Length: 377
Image (tube, rainbow, N blue to C red; front, side, top):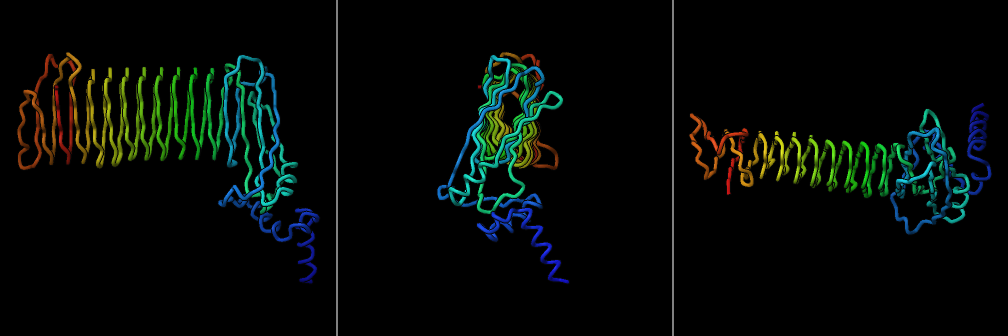
């Protein structure tokens, strides 16, 4: 009886995976069969140069009449995506599918079964890679490269992993997510939402609000006409020439902000640096452990607070005055301005009060275990 049960199970497995495939590849089929049933195909972490690669290309063309949005999720490795704005009445997608296998015959056989399917529902054009239910163990990886020509007024939501993601000359909203590659977004009229993970970012010439989330990589942002929201962790963020308000939350990051026409609200967690120069608008920045703050040429109210980092303020460059209040708990206040500085009773800190010019703007500085330096030269 036990033998009969085992025999039935083996027959069912062979029927599912294919008798011919089993005869040729043996146990290489059985292990990945169960892994794929659990939604867990084995990832390849070896040397791609020793693998056989086979590719095929195709094209999808759809009229824009029923399309308002393009949706692509590209979880495969070795995938580059380029989106180009196009003055036309159709969405054109050029693509290349690739298979990496141990042998050329294996790559060719599997590639024949791969298809890129398109579906339009509720105004959304969705592209999905369809592969056999079972990915054989000797199939090490797949890849898809896209070149997309996007007409004006159509938004795009793209998720990419393991390649570059480039968008240029777009008139429409973009929601882009990229990991382990390079990202470049230029000349966009519309709302831009960007999320990167271990992926360097360039973002230039955007007319619309921008939301950015970065992790473990640098971001270079300039020429933004709209509000800018940044969430950064473990990276360098360079921002230049923004007409709009900034909201920033960062963790162990370095931030350089220049030429801003708008207010800045910033929260600098843990270690990091925050520098802002030539700002026409108010600044409210909070830093925690080991967060250094440096502000220069600010035409607006300034509130800066840090726990164990220094606060440096350069007031030169503007003729307006400041009503100044500065306080430390365990640090010092250094300035050549005509301010009254007094020691805090029973503590190691200091307090400074004073008026510079007509006192049009308020300058409130606090440093718990750091120093405050105020300059006007």
